[in-house]
Length: 216
Image (tube, rainbow, N blue to C red):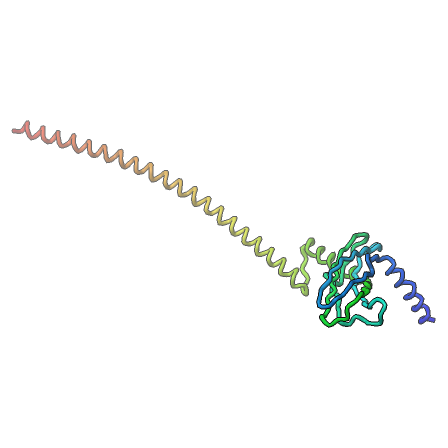
């Protein structure tokens, strides 16, 4: 009974999940000569309520022939693809061929397998990390977060040291200005007293000369 229920669940779930994903075009034909690359663009739209991861795949067959197209490969510009609800996602599809491929018209079919759980898990991890960063909490095993906090701490410490040095320089500049002002005042005082001394010396010399003349 369990096996039957699981089979019914898978039978109902996967067509429903795939029906929510639109690929346009989901198939296209190309004329192949050999040794050339052809690029097409497809659009993917996910009509679910939460983001999904889509793993792209392809099938190739020659039109009106049983040739499987093994001499060619398809490369996607992005695979897997994260699809947001109701948003168009464009992906380039490159068909690369070998020179010895059988020429003709080939049909390329594109399909996708979706995984809702993977995106939900990635979103939960992203939210947890964002919450950790916002709440300033470190996680021992999360090296990135720890380094982020270490760097922020070091930057804050350096900024604080720079601010302290700037304050000290400002204080030193103010102190130097005060010293320069005092030196100017002292130099002015010294100049004034020097002038007084010179004048006093000259007056004293004249007085002595006058006294000598009187004695004679």
